[in-house]
Length: 234
Ligand SMILES: *Cc1c(COP(=O)(O)O)cnc(C)c1O
View 1 (spheres, rainbow, N blue to C red):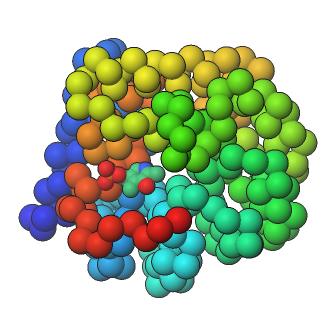
View 2: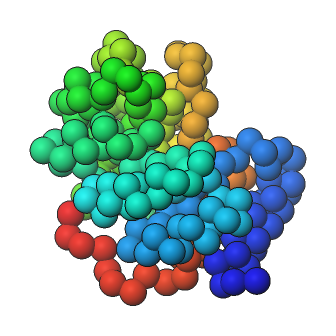
View 3: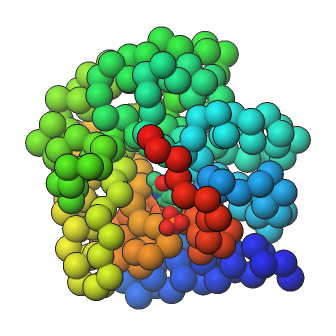
């Protein structure tokens, strides 16, 4: 078994155990493999081990990998990085999902640029749940107004919320912030149909995210190993 196959098996076990521990069906939690900085060969290996959803942070890198993996049936690409408006077209034309909507202007551009022959782009509103100055995302009280505007855009399908909580080492602290996010998610889902995705949890906090109610965990290093160059400045 290869390194990546082995890691994937471990992560699936963690996901399954975390779901079972709180009485959830593991099938209702999507594993998104975050392949940023990793080569196409690693993506192929994960695909061969049954992985279908992949997340990329950098537009150019993601678009190149998508082009190089067109032969992989059912591979689904999620854009999960900060998105500058001048790069929105590449996301609209190449990805199935964008997790990082944090302003109306970006949503409008993606809507206008989404090719009509493709299904609507699935989008998530990114929420700054830890209230860090440096992190992107809107504050929770701004969710209703942005959601209302996005819901009017026909080439976008609003599916839910995404967050990157500030790193916490204690499980209870992770759980507390994840629960605040889950509360925002529940509120949004009572207001709109199609809201079914809470993108929350990474390699180090996926268990807490799952206990809180995450429906999509974004896992990079636990699957592909440590990243060898730091994320570029955004
Ligand atoms: C890099 C990244 C991840 C994966 O992080 P790991 O700690 O490697 O699992 C998840 N979400 C986002 C938005 C990321 O940028």
